[in-house]
Amino acid sequence: MNVIVYYNTANDGIGFVEKKFPEVTIRHDGRNLGFAGAANKALAESDAPYITLLNPDTIVLRGFFKTMLSYMEKNGDVGIAGPGILNGDGSIQGSARSFPNALTGLFGRGSMLTKLYPKNRISRANILIDRSNGGSPIEVDWVSGACMVVRREAIDQVGPLDERFFLYWEDADWCRRMHQKGWKVIYFPEPRVVHYVGGSSSSRIFRSMLDFHVSAYKLFCKYSSNWARLASPLVACALASRFVLAFMMSKVANSSKK
Image (cartoon, rainbow, N blue to C red):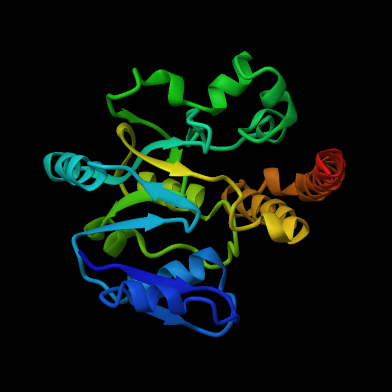
């Protein structure tokens, strides 16, 4: 196994990894390339038949690689497989989803309506984890880039991550491109990781939320028909309003914790 850590910041704080794990390859560009840009740099350094993309705020649980790689070996039509992802409190994260639509902004995984009414019909149509029995693999539209196992053959055919998405939605875009080339995208909840959501962005909440909404707009523009693009100004206004509301609510939530 080759482990490549792409250190995506100008601060020199990675020395402890180099000392404790000398076999790990450390790369440091001196600037923030975004998730897709850094991941692509790492992808280019390996020719392994399978690549696991992993966020820094994650813990891989025992048996993950053995189970996931065995599944990929037996299912040659799978381009991307996403594991079961647990939140820090042990609950299941909604990491398997349908492609976003006009209602995703209101009923997506992180929306207030979904948090208040998680079992509503629209949210369940967006978040697909309940369609699995908790262990068996199911085919889905896309899986979270917090952790995904990707077949090198599929990457060679589809291409790397789209670096126009600085942060967020590059995973949905990649999975859509996999589908377009005939590769399956699978949610396989038996192998698991723990993901402390937002651990890498909680200190920069404004920029993180801004990146999320800007990338959502880019995704809309990339896959919309010519007719749908006529609504681009309306979509931009809706996303801007959602960004302002989400940021204000996060500020209120943080204030209440102090």
